[in-house]
Amino acid sequence: MRANAKILITGSRGMIGSALLRRLQTQPYTLLTPSHTTLDLRNQQAVNDYFATTKPDYVFHLAAIVGGIHANNTYPAKFIYDNTQMHSHVIHAAHITGVQKLLFPGSACTYPKFAEQPIPESAFLDGKIETTNIAYGAAKINGIIMCQSYAREHQLNAIIPMPTNAYGIGDNFDPQASHVIPALMKRFHEAAMNNTPEVVLWGTGTPLREFIYVDDLADALIHLMHHYNSPDIINVGTMEEISILDLARTIADVVGYRGNIEVDTTKPDGALRKCLDSTMLFKQGFRPQVKLQEGLMRMYRRHFIDVLQSR
Ligand SMILES: NC(=O)c1ccc[n+]([C@@H]2O[C@H](COP(=O)([O-])OP(=O)(O)OC[C@H]3O[C@@H](n4cnc5c(N)ncnc54)[C@H](OP(=O)(O)O)[C@@H]3O)[C@@H](O)[C@H]2O)c1
Image (cartoon, rainbow, N blue to C red; front, side, top):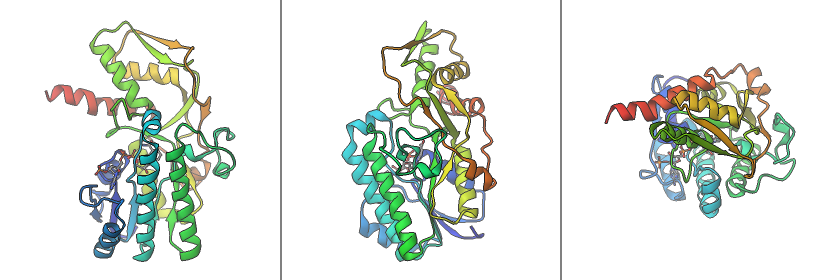
């Protein structure tokens, strides 16, 4: 991205958008960061007018309805309707106004449920996806194909990173919507405060997961915006895996929880392994820097210690 470029970040108050904003604010760019109250991306005319008036050079489209399994199960219509509308309007407006580059994030959950591990980019559309978040996944697949179609027919310079699970400052701790790390952090924090003797995890604790700290993800997106020019999807992960039980132990350690961690093996495990093959990203010259324990400490400090101290 050239100096003084005009950059639109949709979803700039979200977890990933705000991390990106923190990074780009230190650079010589003009940043456009409308909230959903200023610009509701479900409104096509409003999106077209906004693009025509502001004429962004680069677009990071990070606005979306995002959530865990509970939210996906409860609001599948909202997930598919809002997300499909938002990206359709943004991609089309980007084409009409001739933006130099558009970034649309895919998601690891668009890969087939039984893809080979670690998951290469070539696994995309090579099998059935997980059904628990099918509305979100289907909307993402639509956005990916839309970017690739606009690239082919209209030469839109669209790039599609596929981030693994992100966590960190700005994460969502709402029990109805949160992902595994904020959910566990909240539970262990409350258990530590209340001296609860044990915390029970669902399942065996053996499934392996991969996480990326949100500032690393923001840096990866900026790196790709600078250096990657292809509508072929590209994985963005760490290739460092951890079992759910070890993750829980690490979070308990960060939080200072001294009680027992039990597993309830009568409850179901999710997929046994979910890791992206990020070899292509690493070949592009990018490597995540923040280790899990460090990222968890930063997150805990910001969302719990600072909050307690400010009371
Ligand atoms: N988090 C992850 O682990 C992960 C992994 C892979 C991919 N991704 C993708 O990365 C992107 C960002 O995720 P995130 O975790 O940062 O999400 P997030 O924290 O939930 O933020 C979503 C943002 O979307 C905006 N938004 C929602 N509805 C809108 C509307 N109708 N009009 C305009 N803006 C609207 C919200 O704006 P307001 O703040 O103004 O309400 C919010 O800032 C999403 O596309 C997500 O699918 C995330």
